[in-house]
Length: 483
Image (cartoon, rainbow, N blue to C red; front, side, top):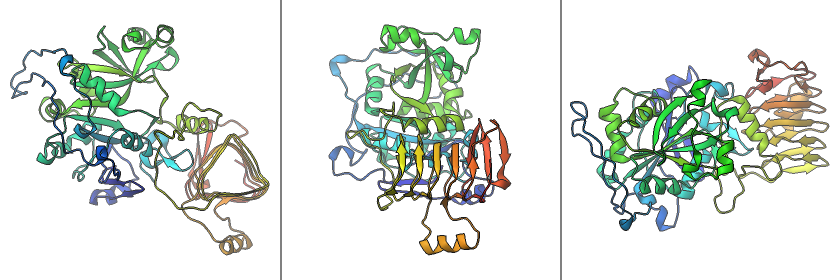
């Protein structure tokens, strides 16, 4: 979202005047740009600034007036005798905050998609920002006056940042998405971009046939250059997008299992190419994945970079739910605990969690919680959560609370037949997402026993999406309720 600012250890929303108007209609409309103002504080010399050091990269042959004429493009092989190493000082990163987040509704009804909690104490935006901190860092700017119409439009409105004389040493621009779960060293990505002499490089993941039609797919030639895009193809169109992924370094046996490559929505552009595409060549195109890059493959050297590791697009309630619960597994495919490349979030300075006579199996329990004689199985318990005795939580994501209620406040609410924040006595919950500050009473049953796939009950404090019950933020579920 425009106006996000990051300083390591603190995430603040700096809303523009436009945001106040947008809030009346809900947060997170159109694609958004998250632009770090102070993206990490480090003593390391490699992370102090992006404004030093010159590197040399052969420029693309382009016309001075892209509108009036076009010239034949000549792609030169990289000069390996003058090897150029990717330098974080010469790379700027742009993190896109995703669109309206409609597929994650109602989690996005009152928050931008990058602010959706994940893994107990993190948020989606922590993923690309931490990957940047672990690869390189960035310096920032101010938001545009108009709301963003798409990924390309979001970047276009910040072109002035890269044309600023203070940023003249930036040669490559890394464009990231704020709603993906993965761990990547972006400088390996940039290095491949430099080594192949690419104008644009698209990060992609190998994909099997069962999931391929859910993504934008690419075809490549024998050099790894992208020659065709197809958005969510099916049938014969899907068969036509098969590629030999050994070209990108995938072992033969894995290439047989995954004969497709899907775009991750993560790109690196040569700075001059990006500016010309946005300003002159495609000034009315608003999206990279569906408009600019598919058109650019005919005129530019667009290369594919294979990322053969865990990656999940957190785009739907189902994928969001599954990705969270997968974190509770023993030796999960993705984890936040890598000591060499940790993921960061805002410190909350909370006390340790207090656990009294509980059964906890394959679960994540965040900071500052109070668990009293309850059962938590294959679930995530977010910060400041309160689970009273007899509570059973299974296959559930509980996001926690933004603040504490005192013991006196809790006692007064219960005495007045009101419900405090947290989960009350003897409540049983299955297959559920519980948003922040939810107040769930005692003797409640949330199990969706009838297997309802879709339901809208906002007045009652919940929705059901893909069979998953979602308790709304700040909702109150009264004692004895059955969902």
